[in-house]
Amino acid sequence: MTGGLARVDNPAVGCAEELPITGDPRLAATVSHWLISAWRPHPRQWLLGCYRLGGIPGWPPAYKISPGFTHELCLAAADPARGWLDPGRWDQAVVMARWPPPLRAQFTAADATAHALAGNAARAIITGAAPADTRTETTRRFWAGWLSDELHRLRQERN
Image (cartoon, rainbow, N blue to C red; front, side):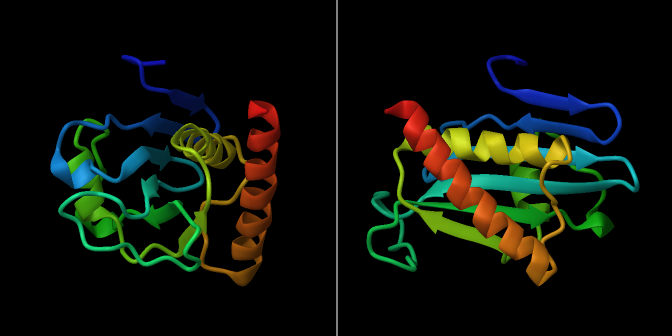
């Protein structure tokens, strides 16, 4: 932990750093967000975030795939043409991520479960258990299965 925020290091690959959620109104829907930096085999970064879907005063209604969904997990690659992202600058990371993100998964969970899911996804990427490159149908299917399994595991753990 660094300053109360999680950090996962894998010397062979890179690191994942949980970014602070400040009082900035642009973060009102944010449950958790991470900057994932890999330097091997080549330098790349991703922004992984988990967001509440709706119910935020002053925000437009969220698009929901199903009316019962409460959260969305997104994984977006940073634009390498804009340089290396600084983990201390979440605002820079959000602007420099490529939107819309190729991985977007909606689900129903409490904030604590959604936060844990985002952290576990960041850990899975940096430890090599899950791919960060979501451009292929194979990796999108992998993530759909992983997210479903991990949500089930987290719910069982919390009961």
